[in-house]
Amino acid sequence: MTDSHATDPLDAGVATRLRDLAASEAESTSPWPGLDRAVRRGRLRRAAAGGTLTVLCAAMAWLVVPFAMDGLDRTAPIAGPVTSTNTPTQEESETMSVADYFAPPELFPGPTWTRYGELVDGLEINSIAGPEHCDWQSAVMMHLGWPLGTVSTTSDEIRQFIRDPQGAISAQLQAGLRSPDLPADAEDTGYRLAGLQLWLSPSDPDGAYLVSALDVERWPRADPLVACG
Image 1 (cartoon, rainbow, N blue to C red):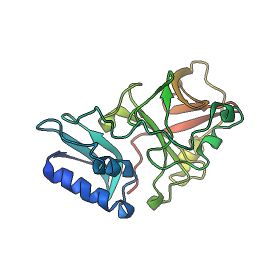
Image 2 (image 1 turned 90 degrees about the vertical axis):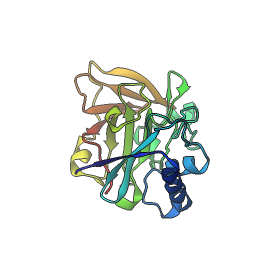
Image 3 (image 1 turned 120 degrees about the vertical axis):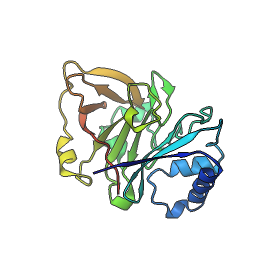
Image 4 (image 1 turned 180 degrees about the vertical axis):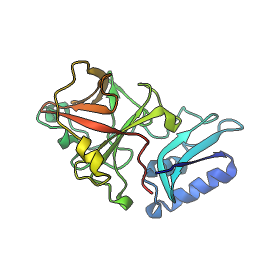
């Protein structure tokens, strides 16, 4: 699949078009309606001349990254943190498997993650359902800012890992979902979703290890990023 990249000045014309998109959110093909809501609420605004907004496109659909470039006021994050009402309590998480956390997966912005006890921006990590208009809603698309701790501003700063138990996106991703033991060199990233932990292994850069109280899942990396077109 080939992604096209478009970079436009974040001027009054772009802001107007984004507001128009927000007004028709119910009809939008965007899998990231949170961007539309942010614009409607006045949270996305030009802070300096020359600010730009980069949107990756696949065919006629908006892709996964509503990224802000130079000139955007970052005092009000676009994508988070937004607290999910479906995030389990610590007590509930003690009896949950990895699959239980995503039954079903949540639409963007998804559940709120923490790192070392602090809420993190949704552009640093998110775990969202695939877009319904491509019938991918059974899959979980996790976007991780890279290097760790990065609040991503370009697609180059993302690693994408996908949980696709039904093969809705691809049989290859389905086959890459496994329940192994943690590799000997696995390292705790500090990211948490209630009791769910994210571990990474230097010897397995193409996998992310999700660790619950009951089991471990390895989610395969999608490289290049998977988009719905």
